[in-house]
Amino acid sequence: MKLVTKIGLCMTAVSVLFFNGCNDTAPSAKVERTEAVVKPTISEQSLGLRKVDLYSEDSVKPEETKYSKEYAGSGYKINRAFQDAPPMIPHDVEGMLPITINDNQCTSCHMPEVAPSMGATAIPESHFTDFRPKHKFDGKKFEKSIDNNKNEISIKKIGDLAGARFNCSQCHAPQSEGQLVENTFTPEYTHKDGAEKSSWSGSKLTEGLDTLMK
Ligand code: HEC
Ligand code: HEC
Image (cartoon, rainbow, N blue to C red; front, side, top):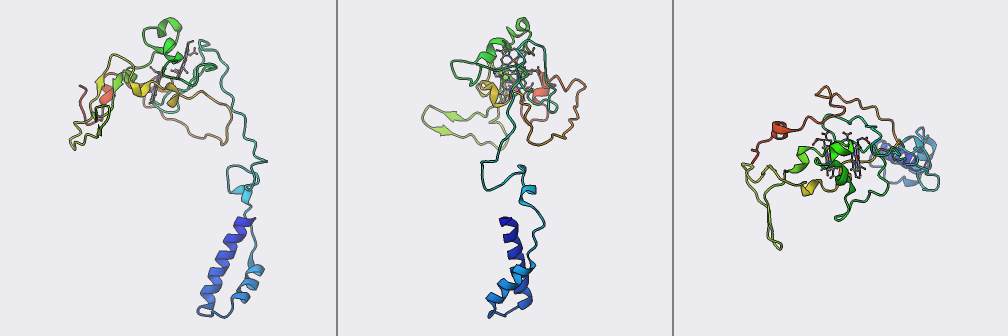
């Protein structure tokens, strides 16, 4: 109850000061009166997400994180959180993470040229597009390009997977069942198949952006 008591003390001290005005002779009287008034009514446990002692980690036992054990190819998919959200990884990622510069197993099943034969969803067009601004870097000196007409943004299709998309697990998380708080969010997809598909391809990629596809 320490926190609540402190808040109570402060508030009472403020009100005592307020009512006593310039009476600076009575600090001890203040304390006596304070003790009589403090009645904590809110328990500390009710303030946080974890309903246990806030002063020790001993009693904290979070729910176990359970990643999917479905093997890749089981056909199981998870609805997207919202229209064009990165889909969650619905299959086991045992042995695939972390992704390193020399070992990215995700690409071995998801690159468009192999995906159909693996029964996997192909990595979409957006991941083969470079959205990065045209900053200058000669290996030593970095120069940020600043152009108020936004000409420094160049969206271009590149033949290969964009560097910014290499680390798949930065955006695509494996699903866990452990839930700290209940999720009451209900998505409203703008496309009727938005729960399973991206709408983001072709001219949609640049829609609403003040730039040109180059
Ligand atoms: C052995 C092949 C294989 C590997 C390796 C693999 N996947 Fe998959 N992935 C699949 C298949 C097949 C599916 C389609 C659903 C299913 O059948 O499991 C899928 C589904 C997905 C989906 C869901 C797509 C959607 O539209 O809902 C995501 C996201 C995904 N994988 C990401 C990854 C990431 C990230 C990695 C690397 C950590 C990875 N996958 C490694 C085969 C693979
Ligand atoms: C910077 C974040 C980011 C990274 C990194 C990233 N993705 Fe995505 N991914 C997204 C978003 C957002 C979408 C949904 C919108 C879209 O289709 O572009 C998506 C969609 C997908 C889809 C579904 C495509 C479809 O047609 O429905 C697959 C499969 C996928 N990503 C695989 C991967 C793989 C494999 C990697 C690593 C090689 C990867 N992504 C890296 C953000 C990311």
